[in-house]
Every structure is written in structure tokens, then in C-alpha cells.
Length: 267
Image (cartoon, rainbow, N blue to C red; front, side, top):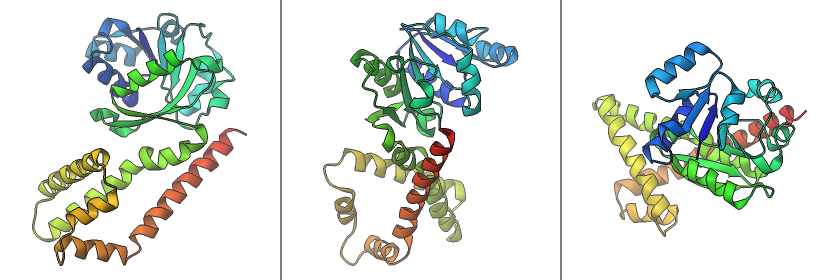
């Protein structure tokens, strides 16, 4: 399978790195294009992969192409392309919906996707938007590509705003949680870097435990909370505060903001 990238920014690099590391493809099967000759040459030298002089050239030599340009560039980029009928296009462009993409690319050749920041450590949670015109084989190709950088879920497009809150934006909330815990440890005399290391590993392990457990997160809380112990003291303190309502409100605001941006972009 030959895979091409139109645009080769940070997310594209994370995906390409995951594909190579997991032996999904070899370097000779990967191509890319960028806006400038200078950046293309720099990437070619660093990555030892094939940079092409035009977006169309990437399309013409690939089985699957990842569209990874900035949202404001999409109209201009797609307007200049002729999409070969045998090419599957995977869009990782935020805020550019399937209806807009279908103005340039036949629905049976395009899947809208949404990887997240953690692709850079091969722990992305990626959404693939349902498309009843896509063949099973092409959907499996998309899953294969994004499983190389983490996990994949297929969802209807009207749930993408929820997904963005749960996976796209939530890493920032988790980083805030880690930072607050770490800074509190500093108050008690622990160096910030060591506190961050400890807290980050605790969060990483807790996420894996929650994902793999047959119990609900609430039951896992009970498992950690000894009668009269330290943990239940902290849990009751948070439950008595505005922690839960603030988190719910943050998710509500993210979903609403995404809806507003999507509605504005469709006008």
C-alpha cells in the first residue's frame, strides 16, 4: 500500500512515524508534499522519504492520501486537484465536514478522521466518521493506518463534537490536572519535575486500568478507597466542591463551541 501526505506538519509526521515503526509500510512507499520547496527538502533529508513537487503528484502515485493541511487551505488545495478514482482520501482537517469535503471528493472515496495530540506517542484516540458509501475494504484500510498510532472508534458525524470534548480537547484538561497536582506537591517541598513524573505515570496507569477493567470507574474508586483512609477523604472533598459541575460545564462549552464553529463553516 502506497500512502501519501498532502501537508506534512506535526500530526502527519506522527502518523507517518507510527506507520513506519509498526511496519505498515516502508519508506519507499511513503510520499508527501509541502507548501515550500525548502521545507520539502528539509523533510526529505531528515526522514529519507520521497517528497514530491505538487499535491497532484502525491495523489497520482498513492493508494491512500491523508489530507493534512490547515483548514483555511482546504478549499484552495482541493479546488486544484483531480482525484483519481482509485484513491482513498483520509481527511484529518479539523472543522471541515463531510458535506464540504464531498464538494470536491466523491463520498465513496473520502473518510473524515479526527486523531488527537497523543498520536505523537502512538496513543491517539482517533475517530473515523461513519460513511455508508465507503467500502468495507477502504474502512479497514483507514483502521489499519490509525491503529498504528493508537486506537480507533467509528462514530456518526453528529457525535464528533462529543468526541472532540472527550478525546480531542481533554488532553489539555488532563495536563491541567497533572500540573495542579504537581504544583501542590511543590508546596510540600517536592521538586516540580519529580512531582510531574510521579503524577504523569499515575495518570497513565489509571487510564490503562480504567480502559482494561471490567468494573466501572466508580467501582474502581471504591477499590482504591479504604474505610477511614486518605483517598476517601479526597474523594468526598471533591464531591462536595464544584469539581463535577465545573467539569460538566467545560464539556458542555466544548460541545457548544464545536457546534457553533461547524455551523459557521457550513454557511
